[in-house]
Image (cartoon, rainbow, N blue to C red):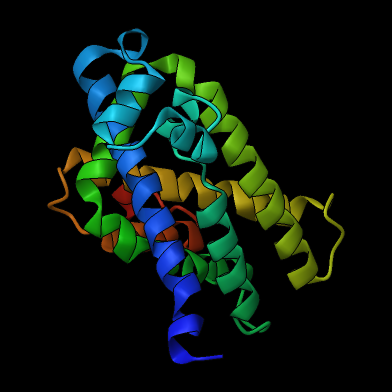
Length: 206
């Protein structure tokens, strides 16, 4: 196989990612401007300069494009989690796994803030977002159960997953609230450190 032939899948994957990103960006921008009920798949496709058929190669509906299927991010977090040495405590292991996303999210801050605003303005999107999050949490819980040597229905991995998910969401809300002036990685570190310390009352430090 030549170098050129070997490189083709990489180029093809990048092109697919660019098309997907363009559709997500167009969907979020149009819905933010016009409202969810006043934007069609055809308009999203036209704004992204692709056909409607191409749109449906990536998403089943405009709602899915708006919340941007998180399967890719979930798979990446799980892959990194699997590489964290087994002696690292579960809480820190999840924190290290999330690091794989933070730089990318910081670089795409404007898009993330727009997505958060669109979801807040259109609560009908929440069930899809919750369902996607639940699937991710299930996968992380199973990975943590295997990591700690307990059954998936044991309370510990589920609790770690829930607590770290909440810590990450709080960091994201604070990040958006600061309009990106506070680095996301710092906010995530602060949230996880608070959890690791047992959430001491702020008055005790004073």
